[in-house]
Image (cartoon, rainbow, N blue to C red; front, top):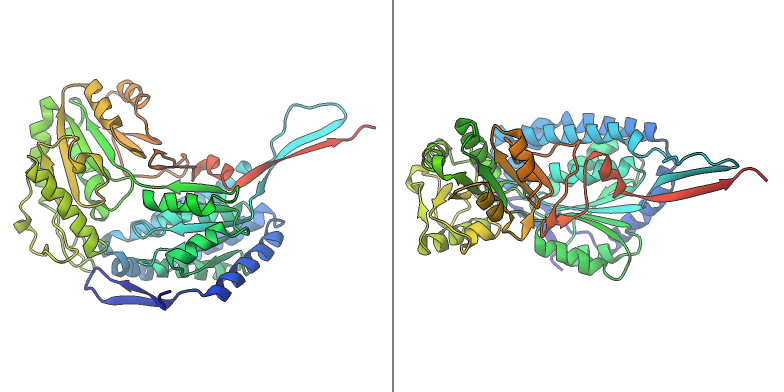
Amino acid sequence: MAASLKTVSPVDNSVYVEREFADTDAVERALALAVEAQRAWRRTPVGERAAICTRAVDAFVARKQQIGEEIAWQMGRPLAQTPGEVNGFEERARYMIGAAESALADVQPEAKPGFTRFIRRVPLGVVFTVAPWNYPYLTAVNSIVPAIMAGNAVIVKHSAQTPLCAERMYEAFREAGLPDGVFAYLHLTHAVTERVIGDRRIDFVAFTGSVAGGHMVQRAAASRFVGSGLELGGKDPAYVRADADLEHAVATVVDGAFFNAGQSCCGIERAYVAAAIFDDFVDAAVAEVNRYVLGDPLQSATTLGPMVRLSAAEAVRAQTAEAVAAGARALIDPGRFPAAAEGTPYLAPQLLIDVDHSMRVMSQETFGPLLGMMPVRNDREAIELMNDSDYGLTAAVFTQDTAAALDIGEQINTGTWFMNRCDYLDPALAWTGVKDSGRGCTLSRIGYEHLTRPKSYHLKTAL
């Protein structure tokens, strides 16, 4: 086993963080303490849990500047955009804290003389959250805060690219007075992560990551009847109808495709545009992309940072080259982006036309600053192409016709359907995917159902 974790910053290829991996004794201590702490925590009233979690959110938000700088160094997002990560964490956390009381309330069936009957949502026990680097707080908060609010203990294993995120959340909970053991983090190798998933003391696994990682979780948990929530990949489409507000559609789709250097499971990776406005859309999209400033994410003028690591950038370069070799046309001159350089994670954004679904760029996850665009003749063709994917996380339509948007949405096989927006999580709505985008649900009242189990109480009171 490697002796330590080393986070290499995509900013300058330096080692930004180094931590010792948890050894067997450390893992055992964390698991044993979590089990013990959860027994007491589950008996803590929901109102007290809410007070502690609210203080933790307050403590976290107070560190916004430090957290933003660390995100930029660890995974390359421009510093000017990192406050959104903290704001999103706060929005989701506060919403789930506020929803807990009603979401966890007893379910009362119709009255029956001589009996007291109800269904109680009881905590599962110990939740193991495995969090990714691309939105290191926004993804983690989806399971951590509601799991704790539901009366569970949580152990988080964060990505080796963003280990400080686990530590900052731990500090906030500790400052808020959360009892020891209710929340903990472990820096783990992949092999030890699998062993923890298989440990009998883990009662639920919340995983966000790749499809391959989701299969790993299923294999590791296969020997036990333990639940798992899997938020995996995406190949999310946008459809721009002829009646769309073109300026809004272009700005929103381009932002949805290139924000965070395209490293988003729900980012737009393919666009289908009504043939009548296709040329106008493409021209406006080229102008929009050419306004990006690629460079050092610590500089205020930068709007597009490096990809997380060289291998990720090389994968996007390869997908682009394959598409061009197969007949696609690249519309963005990389020379407009001086910071872009072969052999580095600094990658110029790119738009492709003359693409089709035989190309990986339109069928397999890209996870980078690359967007393929195709004209379509009508809604029917757009629906067919949007559904032609192994993924089903989100999809979006741009139109001024709400009835048409609803009708098309009924035919799209995804977890979330947007109209005139994309690449966003509303904490009041269930966040879920289908097909290779995963299973389970986070956020909203429904998210609490996956972090608890129903327990029925049937009390005969009249003898």
